[in-house]
Length: 91
Image 1: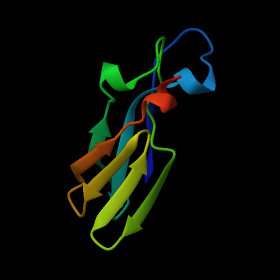
Image 2 (image 1 turned 45 degrees about the vertical axis):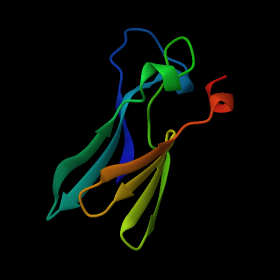
Image 3 (image 1 turned 90 degrees about the horizontal axis):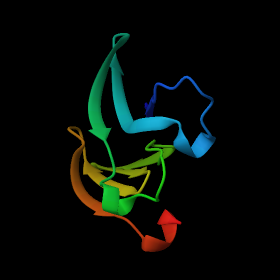
Image 4 (image 1 turned 180 degrees about the vertical axis):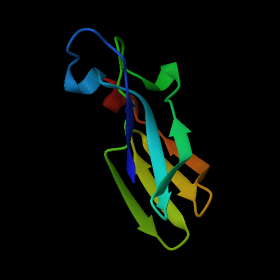
């Protein structure tokens, strides 16, 4: 399962500010296990309060492609092989 860990805030955050870190959670026999926690480095983020969340993923063979930036991960351990971050995506 992919998604994000919510930020704690007493005010309502905009959709693009809501998540502190992107997460991948594996569920086996009903037990969740965090297998990847990712926070984009500041130089890859827009100014302000950026959100970090995996909104989608594609799995092909022994590779997972996750997007907050584009992360290419090896399966089954989700070790990060490559991070693709485009400057135009930070505006």
